[in-house]
Each structure stands twice: as structure tokens, then as C-alpha cells.
Image 1 (cartoon, rainbow, N blue to C red):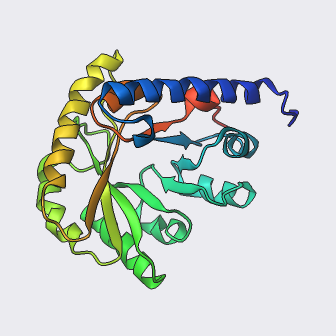
Image 2 (tube, rainbow, N blue to C red):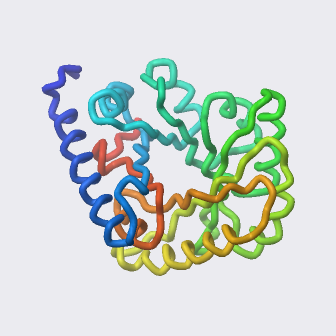
Length: 242
């Protein structure tokens, strides 16, 4: 496959990002905020390095998210990551914490006290503090990871006392819905929950990120308060699984 900038996929990435940024601006304004108040993450799951680098160097992407530890580690040396914020957004097993903590700026998928403690312990060994988001299973789905709201409330103080993590906010993936508007009820509940926790007085909590909204529903998520949207296929095209 050619790496020429005439490659149709490069052109599509540029065009897709222009549309997405326009959508983000429109939704942010509709929600009473400025367009720059909402961060755009390019999700790089299954995406070839050359397309990620194009989005970074030619299209102004400055935040990427990867789902799997091994995939990020296999790509990172070939990515142009200077000045780029890097998040892990997929489920993280405690036995892989040591592999990923040195290389990312944030872990968005903290779904248990056990995992939060493992991250804090590893960050402490490295002499660093790592930013995290706490993942909420807002639809109470058995098939998904994430805190349910009751267990989360019980774990808050324990998590807040961990020394080498900074809790920056919440993340969620709502249940699959037939239409984006159906997801709005979950986004609304999540936004209320985020604001409730934000008002609490928890050590090591610096709440300023509500991460929700993906390719199919990011506009609705922004209208309901999201300030970080995670978009993959709408930027890079349909995922190709090898």
C-alpha cells in the first residue's frame, strides 16, 4: 500500500476530522460552552501507524487513546509522540499495569479499587503520579467492566487515599442503543453523577474530565456535559481486525 499523501485514506482522515471538529463546535455551543472546552481523542485501535502519524502531524491531533496494552507497546516506537497526550482506554488487567504505567499520561478505565491500587503502587515505584479516570458501568451491564454506582460510592474514599494517582474524573460507555438519542438518558444520568461526585471533598480528586461519547453518539454526549470524546472509526474508517 502506498504511503503517498495522495492515498485516499489520508484524504478521508482530513475530511473526517474537519466534520467532527465542526460537530464538536456546534454541540459545545449548544451546551453553553466554547468549542475548545471539549477535547477530541483519536482512538487508534487497529489503526496502522502511518495513519496515526498523519493525523498527528498533518491534522493537529494531540491526544490518542489505545485500547490494548500490547498494541500500544508494539506501535509506540514508530509513532511521532512528542508533545502528544497518550491514554489507555481499554480494560486493564492488574498483571499488565507494570507494562503500561511508564508510557501513558492517563488510564481511563480504572474499574476497581484493586486496579487503582496496583496503578498507584507501580507509579510510586517510578516516582511519578499518574492521572486516572474511574470507569462507571452506567447501564449496569454484566458484559461490561466498570464500577456500578453503589460499589463506586463505597470505594471512593479508599481510592482517594491512594498516594500516586490523581483522579481527574469519570469515563463511561453506555449500552448499545438503536439511535443516538436513546443514549442520551445514560449521558444525562452520568453527567448528574459526575457533578455530584465533583462537589464532594475527596483527597487526590481533581475532577475536570467527563469522558463519554464515541463515533456514533459524541454530539449527544457533548450536549449532556462530556468534555472528552473518544472517536476512532469516524476518523480512520472501519476497523480492520487482523
